[in-house]
Image (cartoon, rainbow, N blue to C red; front, top):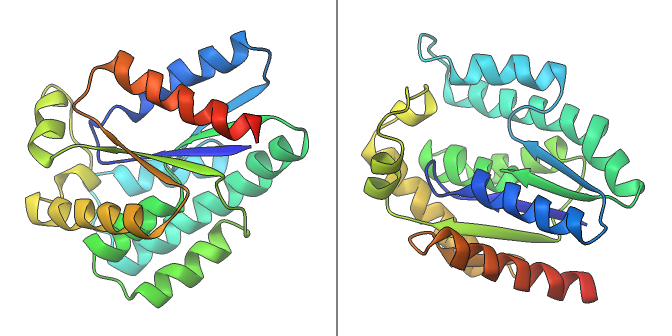
Length: 201
């Protein structure tokens, strides 16, 4: 079972993944948690490049770097873990590419779709949680954080990203939208309810 979490920075993805992992492990499941980009030695090197605010990275270079990191992660960890019957939880996946590089950077959606197919090796999530918050909420939550290259892309960029996520949520049946302004406990309860439904199928 492959479950992904999406949303802009500050939406609470990391917190909810940790809570869900703890819940699933307590209930006897074997769980793997990942983040994108990252998770393998190669992918972590690529992550360092992508987030380095001293570097100028073109839109297409950015897209291809994300897909290279993803392909290595899927081949090295995601696919083997799923084949072993483990539950894989990922902080971001190819929906981030659609939202950030497609809607945010304005890269043609056909290019985005084809590159997502390549980068994911055809592995699709069973369920995707979209923690929806406004840009100003994310900024306030992360106000003490040293912002990386992606986070310095500006409000107009993030408005487009949020719009992209909203469109994905409308069009993808695996998307479950949760109000990220709710308490951590309320969000966790909703996540657990939906995951249990999926497990019971």
